Image (tube, protein in one colour):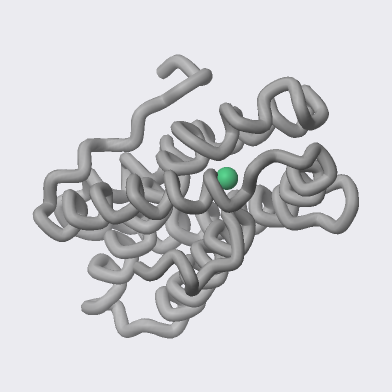
Length: 166
Ligand SMILES: [Fe+2]
């Protein structure tokens, strides 16, 4: 992953969003035998993405964007993680498997909209606040590389809840 590929942190996060959207579409049209592998790919992508946001991007925005936008992002992530961990734990797809992946896709679509919305979205607020988006990009790329290696080795732990208790 080259830093030059992304102009800043927002470009990196948006590219992740497009990757995941593409995978959800692939899941929809896949044959049943391929679905579980695609679902695992979706969940790993989302685990990595939510981790770099929660560890690096969101903390840099705390107090610099609207509190509501900041708090809701954490709650939405934790909501999605319930399904992510459930989908990852499935030994094989059961009758609710497709529905879980579909609902996860709907949750993510909503969350992405909240982040990318023009003017009021989280990314627009971050730009407005003047946070150092290039430094954040570099830190997120470094962390993403570590997590991607862990995912490839099958060592990515279940997604950790930050604000919702289960
Ligand atoms: Fe997010």
